[in-house]
Length: 399
Length: 79
Image (cartoon, rainbow over all chains, first blue to last red; front, side, top):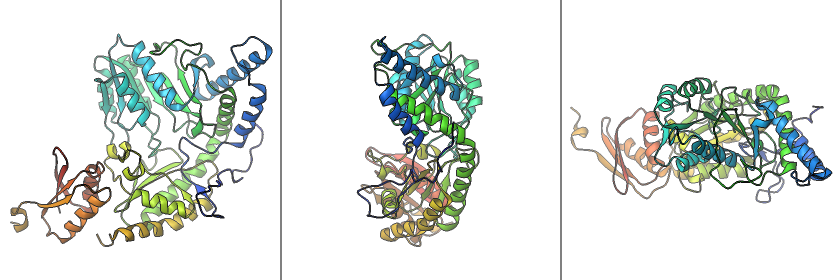
């Protein structure tokens, strides 16, 4: 890779017609939807010209498109620690997860119908597990930091009739890293393949080596939306439970410009990962310390040290999460929330619920690459008065 | 022997209220209650079932129990 633009190049400055004119925007919630890296944008535009043709066609343009697609798979494979032929590209991270769960559940149906997951997998995985194993989806609890119980997970995979085990590498809402090595060892000795969802971690933390299937999300590491990755080790039995297609695992294939841009973004993210993680880890440490010091009745949740470098979440007692997100937005800061009032279903985050922590008044930060100390300090300076304002509207002082 | 505990729990009706209102209503009742008193909050909001125990932990109150009724959840705490 050549030189990278200064991370403070303003890639995160978002012009939003709904916000006040002239307000500088700082988006601090990039999980699964990071700003597109400039290198990825360049690769995308280049591939629109070079890779427009059908990769199945045998004429030169088709072959060139095929070459670009295979090159993208090869580059992704190198980063995730797989062989090129083990890497399939999906039209989204959700599609990669659905395809993995469904094809392994069907491929290993003789082993049994069971699917074991942690309680804090992303909703798409929990839904896929329930879809594939309506009566045999076993959910393993987590502790207060969001880490899965290794003993309980090990017993669950060792029980008879389990087709697939699923564990995330790290939780994208609270940042806690999961014990994938221990769980993979337990799954291996039970003869059950382990799908590791690395959708929140690839590009931010070292890719784990302990997996039988690995899923990752290009939009999370600064690639374009619309590319998911599924790597499958040799020997994992999979069978589609959907119609046959030339693209067997993800029918219809993927956009070649998007695939190429995703691969370039991953190379860039991986090359700057260690340096960037140091910066973001310090910023998150600062959030963890300052929020507790400056905001009364607040709980910072998730593991303080064994975590993703760029993720932090906290819950403020007696605060309406939606009101707080809206107030911070009006002050120029885009943040996420796991509170029920911020979800379309009016259900609180299943992750916060499984951890037994406060779900209301929740703020989640997933810092994009290039977030500066100045961005974070501006956020931390405005947060206490934003919380106080929302509390004052509810009349909860002194409770 | 605490007199408040003998009288049965005080009922806090937070049915129909959305987060964080059930916890706020319970906290107001807890502030007015004598130490050792039991309060039972009735709620229909799905977040309350998680947030009342978390509030009790943060405030040093004791969670006595959670009962699921047909239309609501009843959570009892000792303040």
